[in-house]
Image (cartoon, one colour):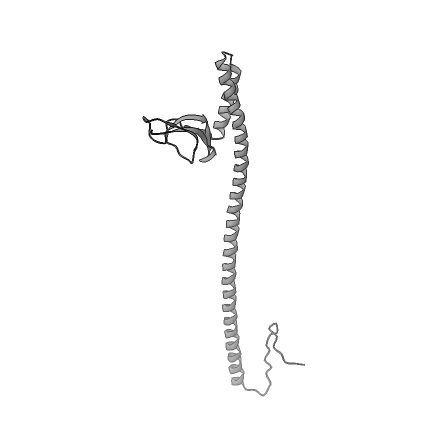
Length: 187
């Protein structure tokens, strides 16, 4: 049999009868001392492993939290993009109703039915925080306005909005559709 040391084995000291009592006590204390030192080293190694695992766990937890935030953000952005597309399509229909009402009003036709529909549409837009951009008389802002014509007017400051051609809208501080405007230039 080979005398290899296996970490699973428990060391056993065999004492012969002819050893003296002092030999026994010195060997026992030596054995205890070695055993204590070995255990102390093992304890230190285990503490180091625990510390490393704690660090790994902290990193994994941070990665999970970052992934969770990113996933939530991606979901929100996806939903907002789809809602934005829907609102844009809805606003086209809304614009058609407004134009129809104006044509009927100019022709002296009763518009009570259209007025009721437009009122419901307005309350729906308000419910979902879709707010019109008031641009008339304001200074042109490329973040909210899109200029499609320029007029010369010496009485107005440069880039003053003189006419709204199509209403713009914002929702949750995000531009849904810019206002199409006419702006002034000094002559």
